[in-house]
Image (cartoon, rainbow, N blue to C red; front, top):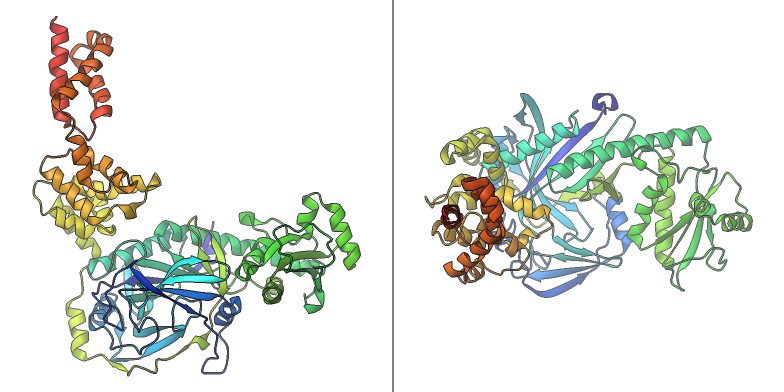
Length: 620
């Protein structure tokens, strides 16, 4: 795409967990914890802001009417349960936030206030998130371009979502309150690939401070995307850079497709949809409804002058009805069919019957949905609002990124009415000395850090970047303290080998740091071979092994007598190769032997035994 012509404008928000021992407003340990000892059930309700207005995103979440189940763990307390006021601000988190602000040349405030940001999707027990504006302005140089910083905030992370069902959401409180820094960049005109590079550089700058957490879920990006004639759409929950680039690409194509739909609306002069266009067809039984409960209501929405709008395909395989389905799924409503779909599914007789009973003209469309009698009315309200919006403009909204890089509707975009001061904490005074200390403790350019890694460990630039960007960097440095281990092999194993196994669908969470350390310790003691590493990691990730010592136990059962039996059979089966290739036959036979012994027996030992056996054959 011609990004300049489209007018792509992107604002990035980087959220990074800080490396502190405790949470932001209490003394609980800053780490994930699955040790649940009780559950709390809550219902969160919307309230008006200071100006007497409801925040649209909060109102939407409230209308879902879900019950929230909180899993209380050992590293959470009454603060996370919202049964006790917050404690004093974590001084270490405050110190790290100031250092990051100094790294980005941002203007640090000498006084700041803890604010409450209304969030009632269940991710906070209190119904709000605590956040502090630390600084504003600043810049970071990327590809010789000054990228402007808008604001830097210190805030508490939200609870960890465990599952989300029709009527209940479940969160763990272990992550609620973890110190988090939010870096908001000024909107920039750039391609998705350039945005990916900018996010990468900011992530590397944060890692260079050595004061942030690493690993999946510790850093994420939210992006605001707009194009000419479009609207600002926020995409949340982006976990990696490939997903970031794909999500921006998808959102641009989606907005282009919607602009084409809007042009069709303008040319066709479709009517406004109102409450008078809603029909209760529960008793009509005019169409075979599957997956509908007896007590469910079935309703039809008449779409005046909407012929061929709902199923009309545009860029990115975009159809309007797909956008509408995303709205009603939040309320447990079943999308049954729309007018064009019923024609294409060869139920034209039903289509005609519906039109005749409800007196719907040929150039009108309709939607049929079913669900709980209370929920269906709320869903229809948002459905009609969205249809009417699509006729005039692309709605400003918040969407969630999927793993494959597409986006789904999440909620309407938040307004300004959801922020107000925290009543339980006094203003935070930041002294001149603190600001000077932050300036003094600034980390250097991350490129300099990479260069020092390449020099210290004799790695190439690509491998140095990979290991530094991975969650295993500290582990790598610790392992390289063992002089018997090759830093290049350790880095390659922690990056390439583990990534390869993940792509095979194996679960990396089954490979813990202790087992990685034990594996490399055994390698340095010559109890396993280099080839064993991938085999051991694969067996640990697939849970064939619980510990690396099980592997050692199994390998120890192979004695030299067994090795000779297997090699003798190999020699007999491949005598023709030995007579034809002479001494060069060792290469082919070695490959065959290592399929059997790889990771179990040292390759040098196999090579030595094979050469002796080949020589004996040739001397006969």
